[in-house]
Length: 457
Image (cartoon, rainbow, N blue to C red):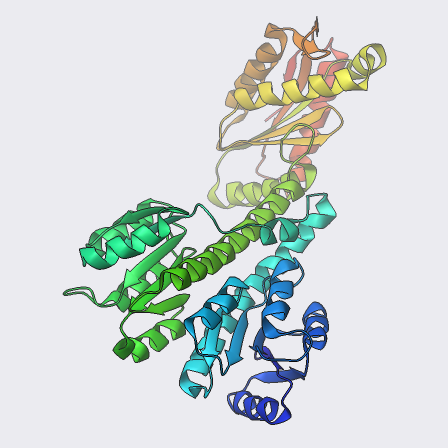
């Protein structure tokens, strides 16, 4: 489905003209004739981009834009102001209100469509991140969308790529009081620096000596290490077609020379806020993924992760005829700990128990809480004898030092019983291995606890 563009203008012929042009370029179009109506449509979630007239009765376009950007529900929607006002102060007022661009009438169709298509791609990417981040709410994470929308766009790390000292110094001087700015005149070195650092924004001069600045912009957009950085082009008026091409290729924004200091600050702020918004959504997605496979008390993998990952390791072991072993661990007399010292003390024991097990295992081993005080350790490429040795190491590590409870004011002795099993040639699933390990654990418990018992190979 194509992007849906909301055209907001109180003059009907203007709305019809813009709607006709956009429809001819295969955009879906919805319309509004005033600010409150535009806000309602945006809040309903049907608009991907807003083309917003400034001069409207009641609530003007500046106020509409400010309200859209102030709401976590609509802050991510790109806004392009379309107006007959052509003074630098008007443009700055629109950018300060949060607009992504400010186009003056009569509109250049090529520029309009390039900008709309560029912003449509950005909106589609943001929507995907928002949808994924929404899942984290169900896991009890604080609202990532509200947090993402609250950033002010200050104190950003940025790189200026410009081989004209007079130009780079002016741009750096305008940004230095608000942001952390570095300059690199060599485009080849700039690409390396950008890949090795974590610049939030890269400002690229298009008229570099002996190098195509637009190529550098596209390289920054394509490399994995730099693709999430915002990129802003700076060029001359005669660079217009190259700048439009840059927008088509995914560059985020541009400025014409001579660079207006206030417009530079406003555009940089908008791009930094958008970049951080997307970063926070990605962080929210990563957190939700981690929470979905992590036991919240111990920090170990949970049963869902164990079942999925163990199955994959089992299949690979069978296919490549490689060893695979599993340990089943159970804290001895853990119910007595809870009954005697309380469940808070029991939780302290479980956390420390998990930490000691992780300390005694490898990074490649899967350590998961099966439930209660039971932990499973899956050992790839490990035979039965070596697995029993790992189990013994864990057992001794648990027994070696008392466990602190009551926030360290008291200590108790804790031991563990462990059952060990390895994959047999006839096994059809991990469940058969787990069953043998569980039976071995049962024998370890019955034999006096605090011991390791291995099932027959």
